[in-house]
Amino acid sequence: MGRSPCCDKNGLKKGPWMQEEDHKLIDYIKKHGYGNWRTLPKNAGLQRCGKSCRLRWTNYLRPDIKRGKFSFEEEEKIIQLHSMLGNKWSVIAARLPGRTDNEIKNYWNTHIRKRLLRMGIDPVTHGPRLDLLNLSSILRPSLYNQSQMNISRLIGVNSLVNPELLKLATSFMSSKRQNQNQNFLLTNVDQNQLCSFHVQNQYQQLMQSSLDLPTQAQQLPACTSLNTSPCSIPFSNEAQLMNMDQFPSNFSDFNDWLGNALPSNLTEDYAPVPPNYDYYGSDQHRQTVIDPSLSDTSNFQSNNSNPSFGFAASVLSSPSSSPTPLNSNSTHINGSSNEDERDSYCSNFLKFEIPHFLDVNDFI
DNA sequence: AATTTCCCCAACCGCGAAGTT
DNA sequence: TAACTTCGCGGTTGGGGAAAT
Image 1 (tube, rainbow, N blue to C red):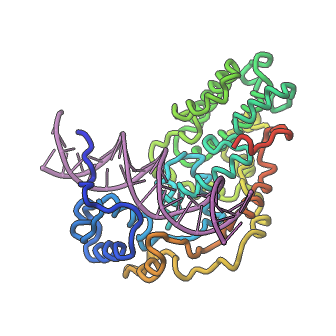
Image 2 (image 1 turned 30 degrees about the vertical axis):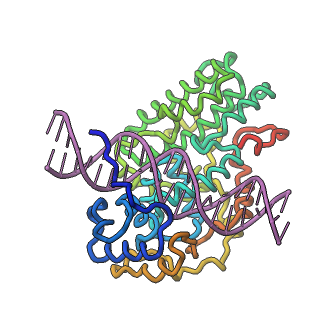
Image 3 (image 1 turned 90 degrees about the vertical axis):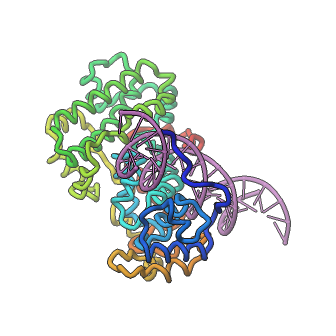
């Protein structure tokens, strides 16, 4: 039953692909398709293992790959999907035509994840960062607002729970309820079951945190591995995501949508703060960072409609072993300055406090 | 100009799932 | 049904270019 090596490693080349190898692989697949990856390299005259060939094809040579920078729309979609699916990169990629799971994964790890951390958002849970909040609770144990009262009334632990944890719970409730709502739309599961499941889950986490404050931050990875994070909300079927288009793509409309999608009692009791899931702010802001000079769509547009492998010129014109994204379409995420701007968009997103004397970057 | 540090991303690795014999 | 093969996924690495010193 054990896994056998994908190929005999002896004598097989590793590392970056040469242009000649790319040509061989493309020529072979053009003629024969890509049925058996194990035998393909031998038949194509390549000194590579099948796995390497498959990766090279799916991540770089495939004709329908869209290269270039991610648009705002794409990034927004990635964040939405990641909040529901977690690191299911292949599923996320399936929702982003022309993007590979590897590309999305890299982009998440190098851009989005860092940005969320800077914003004080946990990129795993899409809620506030527990490490920062835990520090906040230690340093400033005094706040007690209406939101906290709602939560404490619901769980009946007014005097036992650290107020900051209640505040944290409020933030999580907003964030997680968002996910519930998405699932509510995405699935046909009975909404009451869905909500009760998550509410119960959240209360368990809250109570656990309340009773074990010093280790709260340390518990986060454990929670993740135990599939209790919102990223791990179980989908009975990935096809359920196909309905996601019904979900408001622009979260500025979220409040209206929420009112329709959520039972009124939940809206009142569980949602003292309307969720704001717009990581970037308004479209008005968004337009300010569009770089029209990068809107060239000449070479790397998807060739889905072109069955004649029109990729050869565009792909092979770039250095094969170190591909450089040449361009892209749509609105672009362009460089670090825009990332800074994006940070500023999110000033209203955070529904929790990080003491201003704490340098967030110290925790990244 | 030289060196070091940082960052990005293509490619690799190991594992589990699915398929086949 | 066990043994084996193949595929695809997610995590990680390391080479190379850019930025900083």
